[in-house]
Amino acid sequence: MRLFWIAALAACLAAPFTAPVSAQDMRLIMVEEDGCIYCARWKADVGTEYPITDEGRAAPLLPVDINQQPPEGYSFASRVVFTPTFVLTVDGVEVSRLEGYPGEDFFWGLLGRMIDEALRPAS
Image 1 (cartoon, rainbow, N blue to C red):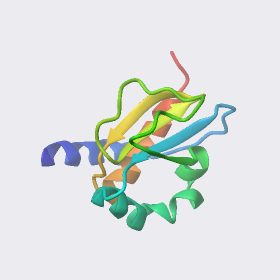
Image 2 (cartoon, one colour):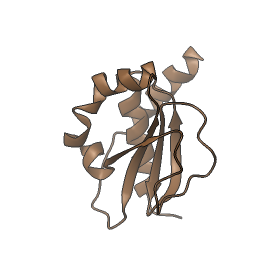
Image 3 (cartoon, rainbow, N blue to C red):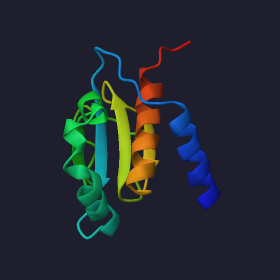
């Protein structure tokens, strides 16, 4: 598992985040629950700075409790089982997800890659 995260970080560093202007409505839905230590860790590490980052401006955060349905107007590809789960949506439809919180350094790289792929024109 450790090699997976190292490879994921290397891939993210090789493809830096760029956020071109897009008319799409992109959101990052954080599915969380009370008592989740990894949710609390994310909030401490990332939560306060997220809204002022390029990623936070490209995909504003929408927190959702795991015991609730997806917010109205949003659909997930499958049921969320783990917290935290970060679901990236474009125009209300899930385009990718990150299950768990791998730590601040990995999170930014993985999220940047998710956003970059979501903004890439379909070929």
